[in-house]
Each structure stands twice: as C-alpha cells, then as structure tokens.
Amino acid sequence: MKSYSGFSLFAQSFLAHRRWPRAWRDPEPKKHYDVVIIGAGGHGLATAYYLSRYQGVKNVAVLEKDYLGGGNTGRNTQVSRSNYFYPQSGAFYEHSLRLFENLAQEINFNVMFSQRGILAVCNSRHELELYRRWANAIRMNGIDSEMLSRDDIKKLAPYINLDCRFPICGGFIQNRGGISRHDAVSWGYARQASAAGVDIVQQCEVTGMETTDSRVTAVQTSRGTITADRFALCVAGNSSHLAAMAGLRLPITSICLQAMVTEPVRPIFDTVMMSARIHVYVSQSDRGELIIGGGADLYNSYAQRGSLNTHHDNFSALLELLPVFSRLRLMRHWAGVCDMAYDVSPIVGKTAVENLYISTGWGTGGYKAIPAGGDTLAYTIANDQPHDLLKPFQLDRFDTGRLVDEGAASGVAH
Ligand SMILES: Cc1cc2nc3c(=O)[nH]c(=O)nc-3n(C[C@H](O)[C@H](O)[C@H](O)COP(=O)(O)OP(=O)(O)OC[C@H]3O[C@@H](n4cnc5c(N)ncnc54)[C@H](O)[C@@H]3O)c2cc1C
Image (cartoon, rainbow, N blue to C red; front, side, top):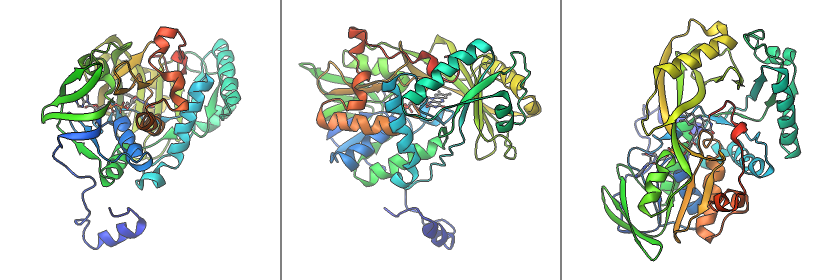
C-alpha cells in the first residue's frame, strides 16, 4: 500500500492523478473466516482494523449489504466530544477523542479533524445552573470544560442573537471537541484494514443465521453461506432485526434522526454550537456548508428519509439564534436510522450467544465513538472478555439495573 503524503500527491500530479492505486480490494467472499463482522459502518471497519493491526487476527471479513460507510457513518453531523456526565462514559469517550486527535497519522488519511470547540448555550437561569453542574462533573472526570458568560459567547460567535425568544444567559464549552470528515474516517479504516488482509465484501446482505447449541455457525448472505469462529454485529439501526436471527432480543428501538446542509458560503462560523432549549445545533464544514441538526423523530421507523416538518423546525430554530443565515438555501436533507438503548448508552461486548459479539446502542452519538468502539470491541473479540472501558456497557446491565443514564448528554434532546 502506497503511503498518502505531500510527496505522493506532488508525484501523482505529474500523472494527472490517474495512477492512484485502489484504496481497498474488492474480494470474493471466502467460505470461512476467523471473524465475520456484519456492517461496514465506522464501527465495523474500525473493529476490523484494530483486530488485524493490534490483535493479530488477520482472517477477517466485513460484510456490507450496500456500500461501505453509507449507513449512519456517512449521514451524521460529524461532532466529536467527550463531555459526558458519568465517569464511565467520560473515560470511554475521552479515549475516543484522544484516538481522534491522532487518527489522521494512525490511518494515514486526512480525516480533517478540527478542534473548534463544542459550545452549549443556556436559554434560562435554571438551565445555566444545570449546565454548571454538568461542566463541573466533566472536570471531575479529568476532561476540559469551561463556563462562559454572554460576552464570551458573543466573542466566539459574533453573529449570534443573544436576545432571541429565550435570551441566552451563558453556556459552556469543551474546547477540544470538534468535527471531522465522516467519509474519510470510514475510507481510512477500510483502506488500512484491506491492506492488512481484511476482506471487505460490499453488496453482501446477511439474510439469516445458522445456530446450534447457542453458537452461530454460519451466516446466510446474498453471496452464499459463510462460516466463522466468531461473529460481530455492527449494524446500528438494524441491530434488533439481525440479533433476532440469532434468537436474541435487544433493548433497542430504532428511530430516525435527520440532518441537513445549506449551500456553501465563506468561513463565517468557526465553532459547533448547540441550544437544547431552542433545539438545534450547527457547525460549518470545511466546504463552507452549514451542517444543521435537531431532535430525533418522535416515532419508531426504519424509513431512512427526511421530512418537511423537521426541516422546518430545525431551520426556524437556527434562524432564532442566527438570523444572519436567513437568505441561505438548503441543499440536502436526509435521515439515518439510530439504535437507541433505554439509557441512551451503548451496548458493546459479548452476548448470550457464545460466539456472537455486538456493538449497538450508539443512538445519535456513535460517530465520536468509532475509534474507541473499534479498539475496545477488537480487544473483546480477540480475548473473549470485555475491555475494561466496556465493562459498564454490557448487555446484562438491563438485568442488573446498573444503567448509565446519559439521556441528557446529547447536545439537544432526542
Ligand atoms: C443525522 C445524524 C446525525 C448524527 N450526528 C452525530 C454526531 O454529530 N456525532 C456523533 O457522535 N454521532 C452522530 N450520529 C450517530 C452516528 O452516526 C452513529 O451512531 C454511528 O455512525 C453508528 O455507526 P455504525 O458503524 O454502528 O453504524 P452504520 O454506519 O449505520 O453502519 C451499519 C452498517 O450495517 C449495514 N447493514 C445493516 N444491515 C445489514 C445486513 N443485514 N447485512 C449486511 N450489512 C448490513 C448498513 O448498510 C450499514 O452500512 C448521527 C446520526 C445521524 C443519523
């Protein structure tokens, strides 16, 4: 595999960029693998990468029903942060943020990680008190967070309308949070995993599972039956459906979250801002588009599409905060199907089916978790025991009652 570098870019420019090698192979599936991962989103690809690179497991396949990175990983608003309330969540997401900080070097792919700060504004005194408690909890977890006054916020976002319908009275920021390019994350992991020998098989839908004595022996796919010693489900909004094929019932509901982008404009907004009360969050991509998100749909669905009422709600909320954007045209809006656990925390690790591992419950916040999710699930599969950071996020917490309630940790209510 050729390294991507300034020099290779320069050299390829003499060849009109026609000689770049393919970024990953397009193999025929083999009959048997040591590990089969279902779902080539960020979590499936990162797990394959860490398995092959750090855990010495090379005979791995990632099966994808469509094209890699086309699920939620290619549909999200790209926000990464580690400002969670509980210490166990803080430790896990901080590990991920640290991996993000070095990800471009690790996978030799420019993921355009821009640590421009995640700013949460408060629209009432009571909210400000709650945010102060949250910001203190984050600091007690050893993670950066800083309370801001109205004046501080005005300096960070000069175009903000501080005296909007619910006037802004302060906020807090995690300066190390930011955004990156989601496609680059999945392409970078895919390229490295493929070079390490992982077979990424696209257009290969898993349609059934063969089980005996509480083990999965094979998966039936649109490209034939494939056997393996161990299987991992990384299928986000389709988790319940796939788990049911192995006889497992998950505490997961599937719900759509929508996002949208405007036409591109010159750099004007260089932070990520969210208001839980007005119910919107916004950032500006390196291409100049404003990326806008809000609350999830209010009903369960597998329909992966946007709707006019959400587009209307998100835009009116945005204009309440930033009327300067009122003349911008909307370019695209879309949805992804999110896998929500009741405590809004992930479920990652072993299951009651001996050789079946799972990565789900990422809900509306699993993009930021891709590096740590892949790293720790790879460890768990290779050693058949949960990684330390994953111990609080096992499936059995729904029996024991040790839930990790991070419902309030999203930037806006979902
Ligand atoms: C609009 C939106 C905004 C978001 N914003 C953020 C954000 O700002 N920050 C953040 O941290 N998170 C965000 N998220 C959440 C984040 O995108 C997801 O949690 C994360 O991408 C999940 O990754 P994944 O690899 O588990 O799933 P996915 O990327 O969805 O990958 C699952 C893959 O499994 C495949 N698959 C499904 N069924 C089968 C089958 N039967 N056979 C084979 N393959 C199958 C799918 O085709 C898909 O490619 C957002 C989500 C949405 C929808």
